[in-house]
Image (tube, rainbow, N blue to C red; front, side, top):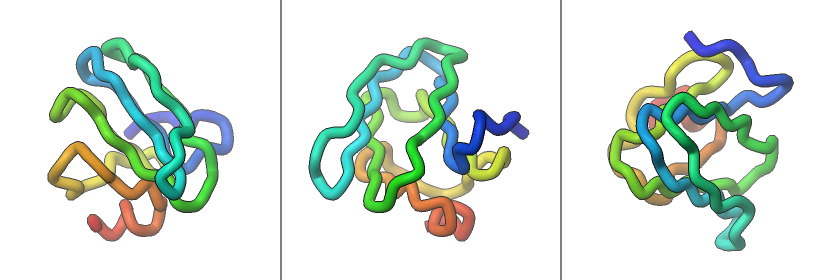
Length: 87
Protein backbone atom coordinates (compact mmCIF):
# COMPACT_ATOMS: atom_id res chain seq x y z
CA UNK A 1 0.00 0.00 0.00
CA UNK A 2 1.28 3.45 -0.91
CA UNK A 3 0.70 6.40 1.40
CA UNK A 4 -1.65 8.99 -0.09
CA UNK A 5 -0.02 12.05 -1.61
CA UNK A 6 -2.07 14.93 -0.24
CA UNK A 7 -5.60 14.72 -1.58
CA UNK A 8 -4.77 12.88 -4.81
CA UNK A 9 -6.77 9.69 -5.35
CA UNK A 10 -4.49 8.50 -8.16
CA UNK A 11 -0.73 8.32 -7.59
CA UNK A 12 2.03 7.06 -9.90
CA UNK A 13 5.21 5.41 -8.59
CA UNK A 14 8.20 4.80 -10.86
CA UNK A 15 9.79 1.36 -10.56
CA UNK A 16 12.39 2.38 -13.16
CA UNK A 17 13.28 5.62 -14.94
CA UNK A 18 10.27 6.34 -17.18
CA UNK A 19 8.87 9.19 -19.23
CA UNK A 20 5.19 9.82 -18.59
CA UNK A 21 2.68 11.73 -20.69
CA UNK A 22 -0.61 12.85 -19.17
CA UNK A 23 -3.26 14.03 -21.57
CA UNK A 24 -6.69 15.45 -20.91
CA UNK A 25 -9.11 14.97 -23.77
CA UNK A 26 -6.12 14.72 -26.11
CA UNK A 27 -4.32 17.87 -24.91
CA UNK A 28 -0.93 17.46 -23.24
CA UNK A 29 -1.05 18.22 -19.50
CA UNK A 30 2.27 16.83 -18.24
CA UNK A 31 5.36 15.37 -19.87
CA UNK A 32 8.14 14.50 -17.49
CA UNK A 33 10.72 11.96 -16.47
CA UNK A 34 10.05 10.01 -13.31
CA UNK A 35 13.19 8.55 -11.79
CA UNK A 36 13.06 5.18 -10.04
CA UNK A 37 11.32 5.73 -6.70
CA UNK A 38 9.66 9.03 -7.69
CA UNK A 39 6.01 9.47 -6.78
CA UNK A 40 3.66 11.72 -8.75
CA UNK A 41 0.21 12.78 -7.52
CA UNK A 42 -2.16 12.90 -10.50
CA UNK A 43 -4.33 16.03 -10.67
CA UNK A 44 -8.01 15.42 -9.90
CA UNK A 45 -9.45 16.04 -13.36
CA UNK A 46 -11.75 14.13 -15.69
CA UNK A 47 -10.56 12.79 -19.03
CA UNK A 48 -6.93 12.11 -18.06
CA UNK A 49 -4.99 9.35 -19.80
CA UNK A 50 -1.47 8.12 -19.13
CA UNK A 51 1.19 6.91 -21.53
CA UNK A 52 4.52 5.50 -20.32
CA UNK A 53 7.60 4.81 -22.44
CA UNK A 54 8.86 1.96 -20.23
CA UNK A 55 6.46 -0.98 -20.01
CA UNK A 56 6.11 -1.86 -16.34
CA UNK A 57 8.13 1.19 -15.31
CA UNK A 58 5.26 2.91 -13.51
CA UNK A 59 2.78 1.55 -10.97
CA UNK A 60 -0.63 3.17 -10.59
CA UNK A 61 -2.23 3.47 -7.16
CA UNK A 62 -5.80 4.45 -6.33
CA UNK A 63 -6.70 5.50 -2.80
CA UNK A 64 -3.39 4.04 -1.60
CA UNK A 65 -3.82 0.60 -3.21
CA UNK A 66 -2.16 -0.64 -6.38
CA UNK A 67 -4.55 -0.73 -9.32
CA UNK A 68 -4.90 -4.04 -11.12
CA UNK A 69 -5.40 -4.57 -14.83
CA UNK A 70 -4.48 -2.01 -17.42
CA UNK A 71 -2.41 -4.24 -19.68
CA UNK A 72 -0.81 -1.76 -22.05
CA UNK A 73 1.16 1.34 -21.28
CA UNK A 74 -0.59 3.79 -23.61
CA UNK A 75 -3.92 5.47 -23.12
CA UNK A 76 -4.52 4.25 -19.57
CA UNK A 77 -7.61 6.05 -18.28
CA UNK A 78 -6.83 7.59 -14.90
CA UNK A 79 -10.40 7.65 -13.64
CA UNK A 80 -10.22 6.36 -10.02
CA UNK A 81 -13.45 4.34 -10.22
CA UNK A 82 -12.51 2.81 -13.54
CA UNK A 83 -9.07 1.85 -12.24
CA UNK A 84 -10.57 0.29 -9.10
CA UNK A 85 -12.83 -1.91 -11.23
CA UNK A 86 -9.82 -3.12 -13.26
CA UNK A 87 -10.74 -1.47 -16.58
